[in-house]
Length: 133
Image (cartoon, rainbow, N blue to C red; front, side, top):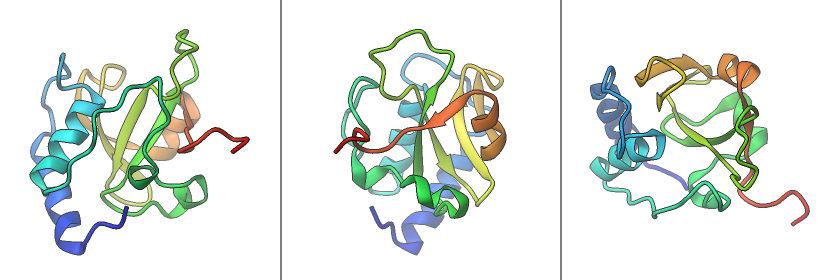
């Protein structure tokens, strides 16, 4: 999905306004990004971790080194025992190296993290469709 410059500014502004907000039921990672995007006039469909992320909302792996600001990256926790889960976490990019997310593993609140660092320590990139498609 291509977001306009105006939408990107709104996405970032709203996301940053939630810094420190407590991670809780309804305000987990997907609840956070759905809320942020909604305030920017973009509706993210209801999705679950058992389905691949919608292509229009997930950047491609080759874009990771130059992540578009305000876009989403879906990730899979490599330590999560739930094998039926395709993705377990979603982050919103703030820059090429930073993301903002609501995470139980990163302070149980909305926080800013280094994208490469969280991917090295815990998460793997999730494509928008199975690798064999």
